[in-house]
Image 1 (tube, rainbow, N blue to C red):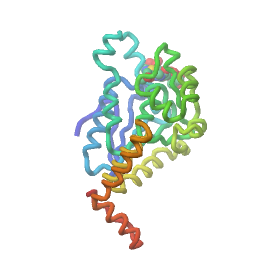
Image 2: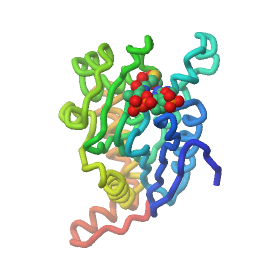
Image 3: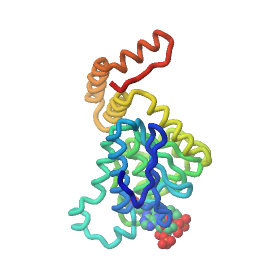
Image 4: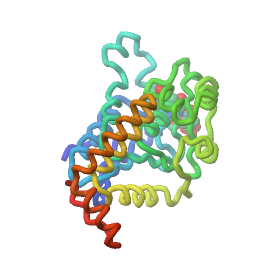
Length: 258
Ligand code: CAA
């Protein structure tokens, strides 16, 4: 397998774990780190042995943003021609469920990376913010869109216009994170949650992710229609027959991913 310079890639059973590993820069997401994360996630997504992915950072920082030092002298044309941040679309397109396990700073691009993941489990030390406005820029990795959909206009506007950082309790209250756990339990909890998902039928989990994302990304009527069609399609799978039969027979299901 490929060697990545800015991340660690591990497998725990059916769970792939991507750990951001640029401690000197508080895991700032430079171009090379984006390529590593996207490359590793793509590799895991293609692996039938993997049923869920966890993206995490250090205790001190999930990621303190895009790399300000790398971007500071870039021009409009540099940004445009390199289509800066476009690589993250590939992470958003991963079909395997992806959990962000966030401790410490999740700022700017770090908050946006967590929002690209399917849901966030936060340690009680996690802080979230979009401080771009303080640097004279705006969010560029999807934050204006995903944060607004996740927490609504009032909170997103306040966070993006002021750059105010919120703590884990506020993040949970406004629906930015799914759950808060003590910092010492964060990785174990995220791994257990990912293993729980990975124990389900992989194709059914992919369909579930696809249709929840339709609610997130499109309008209601189109999403309802897509849900019904995808629901119909699960009746073409062995795992639907097995899952429902196992319930009726009062035994655990044995999914075959078919
Ligand atoms: N880019 C590059 N380097 C960064 C960085 C970033 N986003 N965040 C932190 N670092 C570096 C610091 O420059 C410092 O490096 P040196 O030791 O070489 O000086 C090192 O990481 C440690 O950081 P601090 O000394 O600042 O640590 P601290 O504990 O005092 O402060 C912090 C932590 C509050 C997170 C502070 O580092 C900070 O404010 N960072 C920037 C946060 C930010 O503005 N993020 C948004 C970036 S723009 C963006 O993300 C655009 C987008 O939409 C994608």
